[in-house]
Length: 134
Image (cartoon, rainbow, N blue to C red):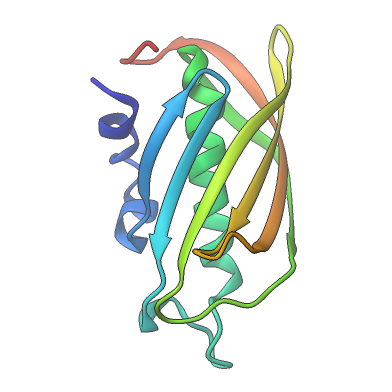
């Protein structure tokens, strides 16, 4: 099983339309094309959509070590608006990995390479093995 197949089981992210495009040890990239159904009442991408995009990228990067990881805390900063037709990319990078914890930085950019949001998260790693290895 590949990481992409495993994370198709994240039904919420899958229903939102997020595609996991790359996974390496401590790194992942996901993308989402914004449609009208992703918008808030003000006509901009709803914050929860951005959080979900970043959270899936986090999950893939954190779980890339082959054991189950869960988020302990996450913080998002919204920097630039996006709307219908934009393609958003979330790149997760491992900043620290310890015996049972990790810290990640996720940048969300648009198709022009402009920074839309930043997301930071810490995770706890359990000893449960995952059905894929990188």
